[in-house]
Image 1: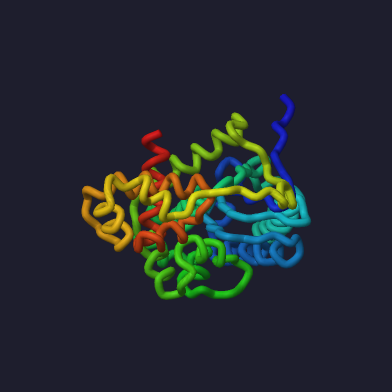
Image 2: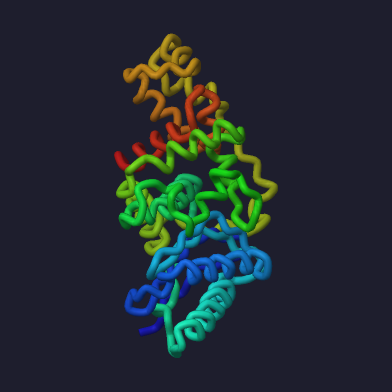
Length: 288
């Protein structure tokens, strides 16, 4: 049977999964995990990729990355070949160590990326290896918590959630402490199914529609339409947390998001957290 073609283009953002052969523990020792992480770092330097998140488990790893000038298959070939050579030499063995080709899924929107970073960083917690995301050494979580400038790009999530260092740290910590991994998986699976079935999918190439001017409503206009009356509009805009305003907030958030506003912009307009907006959008997608 012929292999399915991968959808690849410059600037594409992927969720990559690679497992050990027969799901064997080919990253079991600390030195093995360290070596693989070093190959991630070299891929950023040599293959011109942006790495947003990673986690190395005992028998598989996850990556969230964007390719630029070098195709994904070349990036993955370098990482897996180098690690395979290292592992065979260290274990005094030969042969394949990976379970066929890596899996790669396109990341199509902000909501999916936030869920993906959370899913990747919470993988060890879900597997029962630790009780807290921050306790696992072999993920990119520490780059986010320390805002450590290195080979992991935490800036994209930083801008999505807050743009302010102190607020971002609080938002990120809340996001990673929420035990809703099933919801994260559902969001990811939904996005994967859309790609596989090519539902509403059209890769946006560089410079495409760069002269297109899209008219959109202001956030105030969207909020006024979502609110039932002036009192509700003013209360929501001031950041009221009364439960009776939840439906209007949900309508406002999804309408603004569909018109191209970022979660950060939507959140600031009604004085709530970007995480709250993320939940509204996620809830709306589940309802629909």
